[in-house]
Image (cartoon, rainbow, N blue to C red; front, side, top):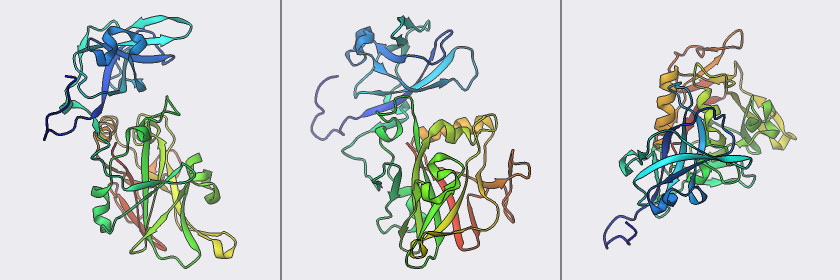
Length: 321
């Protein structure tokens, strides 16, 4: 530990893990810090502990049980404990016994800037990501998308946020001067105002359009959890004709709605996403009362792509972290 890798060894990398801990009576205030027996964890000194991000109640429902994400430096190992630090009170240590950090094989995802390949570009407004195909076929795009970076998932400027990059795809033939936008029922998608949506789609060969928008990850995965109070994610592609002063043409029929999963499946999907798996959302339509989801006309409950009117294919995917 602490020595440079031998010639020919694979370069070491930071990694992100999810740790579980108990904190009686805690409601999420202050900062959760990981301290431990190794220098990388501060030798049990909270002043130099590692900050946890994205803390949430443990899905098991056990009282006072929490989980959170932490970025561990290469070589971090040994015992750890979680400490809560707030400005108006003394440090609170978890009553749990000391636990061992997960091994590299148990990490959710490695962070190795030397080997990661970025196939997307941050938009000027900071809200969209144009996904490049690099001459890959449409069917190969998913497997060729790079994992999003640590800072994309846990942004420094939003310490309480855990973000997921959601990709919208469509196939449609547009005229010169027209562009394709995804509008929807949330601020990221403009509250149904195409001009305010962050999801202006990028064209690629074959009339394939792609846009990606960062959403709060727990909101997105909560929206596919049948037990969650999170709002449904509804959307629809819109043609905006700049040659005609911004006139818009909406896709006909019902709005699209991201279908929820049963609770255990939603937790599994979230964990797979944290492990780097891309998540292909299944699509439905709002139910008649607006409180649920119905099958798309002529399609079953498991559909991940739909065709309608002037759009030959529409799909949604969450990029693996």
